[in-house]
Length: 330
Ligand code: AHM
Ligand code: MG
Image 1 (tube, rainbow, N blue to C red):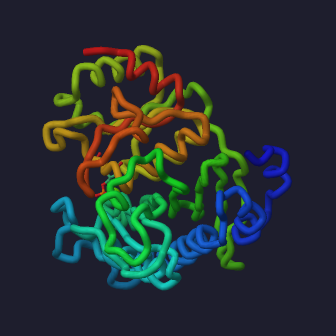
Image 2 (tube, rainbow, N blue to C red):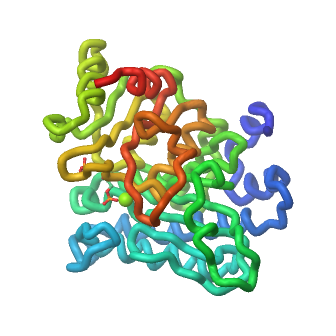
């Protein structure tokens, strides 16, 4: 664990320098994971550039196709998927790619050591109305031997096996927040220099907050326990804040303290969010920041995925709030 003071002294470091300085945290580090993080940062800059052009050129709106979950794909969803796939395929560090936008995983047929699960552009229904969106990523070590085809054991790994994870928030500024299991650090993009700089060292979520984030329009179909927890939030004068863009809601709650919940609903009987490329990454980040993530009963990171696009109920945020929500029974 790097000392908080050493991290604090790194404020203003470029992402590149920070990654290089902390490379010794990775067991058996050979620089590949560092390169992979740089590839993600580079792709995010390209996506950020496209996102900022929305409204000016023809990249908004649906493209007319559906993603793995049958949801309408936006032009920027597809574009972001192409940008990340290209950036991650070229370096040779990644051997397989799992994406929200593609039905099955992509075997890159190389000697890469890492498997990556990614939601290239989450919350993309918000693009047309100029609301923050994000990219979410999880990085795992390959388990099968190099030279063999990618196996199920490489793909369906538990969240606890992630070696790094994070997100990019395309908001009023663009931020890259990630963890390699040694705390959470946030970098802000400086557009005139084209660089990410460390702005939020060693991020910690308050143990208790006063914000709850849930789509209350679905409340007629919440499980009883969630209905009662929402009542508890109201009885305690918590504030409701829901952007409907997971990365933005998560990031705000990480900074201020709060809880985000997407439970089972009538339409999404097992929850809406995807375990492998939405929940696991954010669960790893929140635990590293001192918070908690659960499906209501089980730790998200302990769930063994049975399929690529598996959904799960998701409760994430300040530890005392998530524990309270788990404690209330319907
Ligand atoms: P997406 O992957 O299709 O973009 O959907 C995920 C999004 C999350 O960003 C957000 O928190 C949630 O769906 C909002 O869902 P709802 O509109 O049902 O509240
Ligand atoms: Mg998504």
